[in-house]
Length: 324
Ligand SMILES: [Ca+2]
Image (cartoon, rainbow, N blue to C red):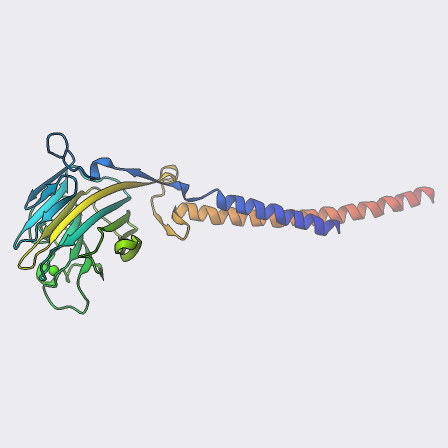
């Protein structure tokens, strides 16, 4: 009876200790911080009709309170919007809103997002150079050649400065991951979320029109980008045309507080959010240690219980001997 009470108390104590430790390592280890000079909201032009953080050129215009139109819906246009300073965070999340639309039926070519070592150099990768160094994500609305998948197509490429984006086959030689999705002529602006965890993963997801829920598009595992990159948005039209509008950009750094404490830099996603690999090991070690301690306590308790029983009998026999 005493033994069963003892073991049940130990069990309760153990479960409390274990659950406490699970709660003690929540997602609070991850902290987001806004990077204002790499974000952009209307009004886009301030301080004497200029923007101190972003520059734009070629066919691009800013409608001060509404949109940045990378290209108008006119033939053979290119335009660009680039950050003036690079993003230098190890891990980051960029959300931007865009709208692609026009009244015509022959629509293209699309626009691209870049995180690259160089900036504002014009070329044939949706208005940027084809051999860029860093990340390019293409929102391609016009199939330049035949494929086994449908368009519009969202595709990602990581360039090393030599690899070329070939627009004639829609980047088929250089694209790593892609998905097909309806990305133009939506009722509401579309949001895109790009999350980069250094040397670990790059995820791209988009909202599905008015529901505003994110749908996963692509993931590049073990993605490795240059240490810093300028943020760029470029677009182009040919015979096919569209208005390519950027509406807002929000850039956040992702700071893993645990990184600083341990020097462990590798972090990844789990069902409970983004945690460090070291943290995950610690969680299992703590649980194992507690189970071992608990087991030893149960054994000790059992031994003490046996010894107590034995002492009682021994005392009785001594008493018996005394009187005997
Ligand atoms: Ca294309």
